[in-house]
Length: 265
Image (cartoon, rainbow, N blue to C red; front, side, top):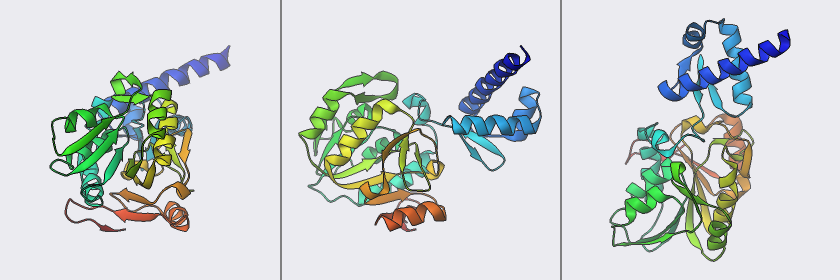
Protein backbone atom coordinates (compact mmCIF):
# COMPACT_ATOMS: atom_id res chain seq x y z
CA UNK A 1 0.00 0.00 0.00
CA UNK A 2 2.75 2.44 0.98
CA UNK A 3 4.61 1.75 -2.28
CA UNK A 4 1.56 2.53 -4.42
CA UNK A 5 0.97 5.77 -2.52
CA UNK A 6 4.56 6.85 -3.23
CA UNK A 7 4.02 6.10 -6.94
CA UNK A 8 0.88 8.24 -7.03
CA UNK A 9 2.62 11.10 -5.23
CA UNK A 10 5.57 10.94 -7.62
CA UNK A 11 3.29 10.97 -10.66
CA UNK A 12 1.44 13.96 -9.26
CA UNK A 13 4.72 15.82 -8.68
CA UNK A 14 5.81 15.02 -12.23
CA UNK A 15 2.58 16.48 -13.62
CA UNK A 16 3.00 19.63 -11.55
CA UNK A 17 6.64 20.05 -12.57
CA UNK A 18 5.78 19.79 -16.27
CA UNK A 19 2.89 22.21 -15.84
CA UNK A 20 5.18 24.77 -14.18
CA UNK A 21 7.86 24.43 -16.87
CA UNK A 22 5.42 24.60 -19.79
CA UNK A 23 3.58 27.61 -18.45
CA UNK A 24 6.50 29.61 -17.11
CA UNK A 25 9.59 28.39 -18.96
CA UNK A 26 12.82 27.17 -17.32
CA UNK A 27 12.70 26.82 -13.52
CA UNK A 28 15.33 26.35 -10.85
CA UNK A 29 15.38 23.35 -8.53
CA UNK A 30 14.96 25.65 -5.54
CA UNK A 31 11.86 27.27 -7.03
CA UNK A 32 10.30 23.90 -7.85
CA UNK A 33 11.12 22.67 -4.36
CA UNK A 34 9.26 25.60 -2.79
CA UNK A 35 6.25 25.28 -5.07
CA UNK A 36 5.88 21.53 -4.50
CA UNK A 37 6.74 21.55 -0.81
CA UNK A 38 9.40 18.86 -1.15
CA UNK A 39 13.17 18.79 -0.75
CA UNK A 40 15.55 19.85 -3.54
CA UNK A 41 16.90 16.27 -3.56
CA UNK A 42 13.40 14.95 -4.35
CA UNK A 43 13.00 17.48 -7.15
CA UNK A 44 16.37 16.47 -8.63
CA UNK A 45 15.32 12.80 -8.64
CA UNK A 46 12.06 13.77 -10.33
CA UNK A 47 13.92 15.77 -12.98
CA UNK A 48 16.23 12.84 -13.71
CA UNK A 49 13.20 10.55 -14.23
CA UNK A 50 11.39 13.07 -16.43
CA UNK A 51 14.51 13.60 -18.54
CA UNK A 52 14.89 9.83 -18.97
CA UNK A 53 11.28 9.78 -20.18
CA UNK A 54 12.08 12.49 -22.74
CA UNK A 55 9.76 15.08 -21.19
CA UNK A 56 12.26 17.75 -20.16
CA UNK A 57 15.90 18.76 -20.35
CA UNK A 58 17.93 19.40 -17.22
CA UNK A 59 20.00 22.56 -17.31
CA UNK A 60 22.36 24.03 -14.74
CA UNK A 61 20.39 24.42 -11.51
CA UNK A 62 17.03 23.43 -12.94
CA UNK A 63 15.16 22.22 -16.03
CA UNK A 64 13.27 23.27 -19.16
CA UNK A 65 10.28 21.39 -20.57
CA UNK A 66 10.55 19.58 -23.87
CA UNK A 67 8.68 21.43 -26.59
CA UNK A 68 8.19 18.46 -28.92
CA UNK A 69 4.59 17.70 -28.00
CA UNK A 70 3.48 21.26 -27.34
CA UNK A 71 1.15 22.98 -29.81
CA UNK A 72 2.92 24.96 -32.53
CA UNK A 73 1.63 28.30 -31.25
CA UNK A 74 3.29 27.78 -27.87
CA UNK A 75 6.64 26.66 -29.26
CA UNK A 76 6.69 29.53 -31.76
CA UNK A 77 7.23 32.00 -28.90
CA UNK A 78 10.30 30.21 -27.50
CA UNK A 79 13.93 31.24 -28.33
CA UNK A 80 12.84 33.35 -31.30
CA UNK A 81 16.10 35.33 -31.56
CA UNK A 82 18.14 32.11 -31.61
CA UNK A 83 15.93 30.61 -34.32
CA UNK A 84 16.13 33.79 -36.40
CA UNK A 85 19.94 33.77 -36.27
CA UNK A 86 19.97 30.13 -37.43
CA UNK A 87 17.37 30.86 -40.12
CA UNK A 88 19.33 33.80 -41.54
CA UNK A 89 22.45 31.68 -41.92
CA UNK A 90 20.48 28.80 -43.48
CA UNK A 91 18.80 31.11 -46.00
CA UNK A 92 22.21 32.36 -47.13
CA UNK A 93 23.23 28.79 -48.02
CA UNK A 94 20.59 28.57 -50.76
CA UNK A 95 21.07 29.95 -54.29
CA UNK A 96 18.24 31.36 -56.36
CA UNK A 97 16.73 28.77 -58.66
CA UNK A 98 17.23 25.91 -56.21
CA UNK A 99 14.63 23.71 -54.55
CA UNK A 100 14.26 23.72 -50.78
CA UNK A 101 12.47 21.17 -48.59
CA UNK A 102 11.34 22.60 -45.25
CA UNK A 103 10.56 20.31 -42.33
CA UNK A 104 7.85 20.86 -39.74
CA UNK A 105 8.54 23.02 -36.70
CA UNK A 106 9.11 26.60 -35.73
CA UNK A 107 12.72 27.01 -36.91
CA UNK A 108 11.68 26.01 -40.44
CA UNK A 109 8.95 28.64 -40.20
CA UNK A 110 11.50 31.28 -39.19
CA UNK A 111 13.58 30.20 -42.21
CA UNK A 112 10.56 30.56 -44.51
CA UNK A 113 10.26 34.19 -43.38
CA UNK A 114 13.82 34.74 -44.66
CA UNK A 115 12.99 33.46 -48.16
CA UNK A 116 10.61 36.19 -49.29
CA UNK A 117 11.58 37.79 -52.56
CA UNK A 118 13.75 34.85 -53.62
CA UNK A 119 13.29 32.80 -56.80
CA UNK A 120 13.00 29.31 -55.32
CA UNK A 121 10.92 26.17 -55.20
CA UNK A 122 9.83 25.41 -51.64
CA UNK A 123 8.40 22.00 -50.73
CA UNK A 124 6.90 21.48 -47.28
CA UNK A 125 4.53 19.59 -45.01
CA UNK A 126 4.55 22.57 -42.64
CA UNK A 127 1.24 24.41 -42.87
CA UNK A 128 2.65 27.59 -41.30
CA UNK A 129 5.41 27.66 -43.93
CA UNK A 130 2.74 27.29 -46.61
CA UNK A 131 0.71 30.16 -45.14
CA UNK A 132 3.83 32.35 -44.86
CA UNK A 133 4.83 31.88 -48.52
CA UNK A 134 1.44 31.42 -50.22
CA UNK A 135 1.26 35.01 -51.52
CA UNK A 136 4.91 35.25 -52.63
CA UNK A 137 4.67 34.92 -56.41
CA UNK A 138 8.42 34.47 -56.83
CA UNK A 139 8.33 31.19 -54.96
CA UNK A 140 7.06 27.99 -56.54
CA UNK A 141 5.29 26.42 -53.58
CA UNK A 142 4.60 22.69 -53.23
CA UNK A 143 2.43 21.55 -50.32
CA UNK A 144 2.72 17.85 -49.53
CA UNK A 145 -0.47 15.87 -48.93
CA UNK A 146 -1.30 13.89 -45.81
CA UNK A 147 -3.25 13.79 -42.58
CA UNK A 148 -3.48 17.17 -40.86
CA UNK A 149 -2.17 17.47 -37.29
CA UNK A 150 -4.03 20.66 -36.49
CA UNK A 151 -2.32 21.78 -33.27
CA UNK A 152 1.13 20.99 -34.67
CA UNK A 153 0.40 22.58 -38.08
CA UNK A 154 1.84 19.69 -40.04
CA UNK A 155 0.92 16.95 -42.51
CA UNK A 156 1.91 13.34 -41.85
CA UNK A 157 1.22 9.77 -42.94
CA UNK A 158 1.67 7.52 -45.96
CA UNK A 159 0.33 10.14 -48.37
CA UNK A 160 3.06 12.57 -47.29
CA UNK A 161 5.71 9.88 -47.65
CA UNK A 162 4.39 8.86 -51.10
CA UNK A 163 4.53 12.48 -52.28
CA UNK A 164 8.15 12.73 -51.16
CA UNK A 165 9.12 9.64 -53.14
CA UNK A 166 8.07 11.48 -56.29
CA UNK A 167 10.03 14.66 -55.55
CA UNK A 168 13.62 15.85 -55.34
CA UNK A 169 15.10 18.82 -53.49
CA UNK A 170 18.53 20.45 -53.56
CA UNK A 171 18.30 21.24 -49.85
CA UNK A 172 16.50 19.87 -46.82
CA UNK A 173 16.40 21.96 -43.68
CA UNK A 174 15.57 19.52 -40.92
CA UNK A 175 14.32 20.18 -37.41
CA UNK A 176 14.91 18.06 -34.30
CA UNK A 177 13.97 17.57 -30.66
CA UNK A 178 17.51 16.62 -29.69
CA UNK A 179 21.00 15.63 -30.85
CA UNK A 180 22.73 12.92 -28.85
CA UNK A 181 26.50 12.95 -28.13
CA UNK A 182 26.92 10.27 -30.82
CA UNK A 183 25.38 12.62 -33.37
CA UNK A 184 22.04 10.83 -33.61
CA UNK A 185 19.13 13.10 -34.52
CA UNK A 186 16.11 12.41 -32.28
CA UNK A 187 12.42 13.33 -32.19
CA UNK A 188 9.75 13.18 -29.51
CA UNK A 189 6.87 12.77 -31.98
CA UNK A 190 7.02 9.28 -33.43
CA UNK A 191 4.44 9.94 -36.16
CA UNK A 192 6.70 12.60 -37.70
CA UNK A 193 9.77 10.34 -37.98
CA UNK A 194 8.86 8.45 -41.21
CA UNK A 195 8.18 11.76 -42.94
CA UNK A 196 11.53 13.15 -41.85
CA UNK A 197 13.30 10.02 -43.13
CA UNK A 198 11.49 10.33 -46.47
CA UNK A 199 12.59 13.97 -46.68
CA UNK A 200 16.21 12.94 -46.16
CA UNK A 201 16.00 10.42 -49.01
CA UNK A 202 14.47 13.05 -51.30
CA UNK A 203 17.26 15.62 -50.80
CA UNK A 204 20.81 16.19 -52.04
CA UNK A 205 21.97 18.22 -49.03
CA UNK A 206 20.64 17.78 -45.50
CA UNK A 207 21.12 20.63 -43.02
CA UNK A 208 20.04 20.23 -39.42
CA UNK A 209 18.75 23.38 -37.72
CA UNK A 210 19.30 23.04 -33.97
CA UNK A 211 19.34 25.78 -31.34
CA UNK A 212 21.27 25.44 -28.08
CA UNK A 213 18.41 23.66 -26.27
CA UNK A 214 18.69 20.71 -28.68
CA UNK A 215 22.08 19.55 -27.35
CA UNK A 216 21.28 16.97 -26.05
CA UNK A 217 17.58 17.95 -26.05
CA UNK A 218 15.01 15.17 -25.89
CA UNK A 219 13.38 12.48 -27.99
CA UNK A 220 12.97 8.72 -27.93
CA UNK A 221 12.74 8.09 -31.68
CA UNK A 222 15.82 8.16 -33.88
CA UNK A 223 15.40 10.06 -37.14
CA UNK A 224 18.88 9.49 -38.56
CA UNK A 225 22.57 9.23 -37.74
CA UNK A 226 25.26 11.86 -38.37
CA UNK A 227 26.21 10.12 -41.61
CA UNK A 228 22.91 11.36 -43.11
CA UNK A 229 23.74 15.02 -42.47
CA UNK A 230 25.84 17.45 -44.48
CA UNK A 231 25.77 20.32 -41.99
CA UNK A 232 24.45 21.43 -38.62
CA UNK A 233 23.60 25.10 -38.12
CA UNK A 234 23.30 26.13 -34.49
CA UNK A 235 23.52 29.28 -32.39
CA UNK A 236 25.86 28.04 -29.66
CA UNK A 237 29.08 26.02 -29.46
CA UNK A 238 28.38 22.27 -29.59
CA UNK A 239 29.81 20.15 -26.76
CA UNK A 240 33.06 18.37 -27.58
CA UNK A 241 31.67 14.81 -27.74
CA UNK A 242 28.81 15.71 -30.09
CA UNK A 243 30.99 17.89 -32.28
CA UNK A 244 33.59 15.14 -32.58
CA UNK A 245 30.93 12.59 -33.62
CA UNK A 246 29.52 14.97 -36.22
CA UNK A 247 32.87 15.95 -37.68
CA UNK A 248 34.06 12.32 -37.83
CA UNK A 249 31.01 11.68 -40.03
CA UNK A 250 32.01 14.57 -42.31
CA UNK A 251 29.36 17.00 -41.03
CA UNK A 252 30.12 20.74 -41.11
CA UNK A 253 29.24 22.32 -37.76
CA UNK A 254 28.39 25.99 -38.26
CA UNK A 255 27.80 28.61 -35.59
CA UNK A 256 25.25 31.23 -36.60
CA UNK A 257 25.62 34.48 -34.71
CA UNK A 258 23.44 37.51 -35.06
CA UNK A 259 21.97 37.85 -38.59
CA UNK A 260 24.75 38.98 -40.88
CA UNK A 261 27.48 37.80 -38.51
CA UNK A 262 27.40 34.05 -39.06
CA UNK A 263 30.65 32.17 -38.98
CA UNK A 264 32.18 28.73 -38.53
CA UNK A 265 31.97 27.21 -35.07
